[in-house]
Length: 94
Image 1 (tube, rainbow, N blue to C red):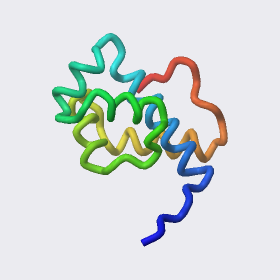
Image 2 (cartoon, one colour; image 1 turned 45 degrees about the vertical axis):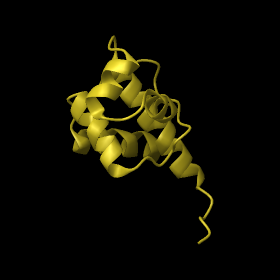
Image 3 (spheres, rainbow, N blue to C red; image 1 turned 180 degrees about the horizontal axis):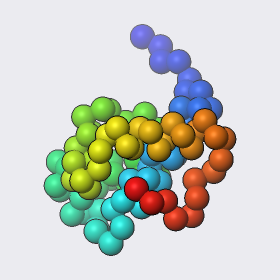
């Protein structure tokens, strides 16, 4: 099976998702959030940095739960920022 290359929109969504998660983590350490989400710190680091632009649904759901984020709100924010074509603001209110 050959995986299709990611589109520019998919890459941008991954970058935006990572930024939103990083902002929501705020003062909490990656170790704390990763442990609570049941994932490795390296996975969280890659997602926050946009290096995993299409993380698995259950991984995102676990991180969102650890950060007390609504998946609906998270999706709405990512889609709104991608649709607007605007870069992620320096301070993202989640």
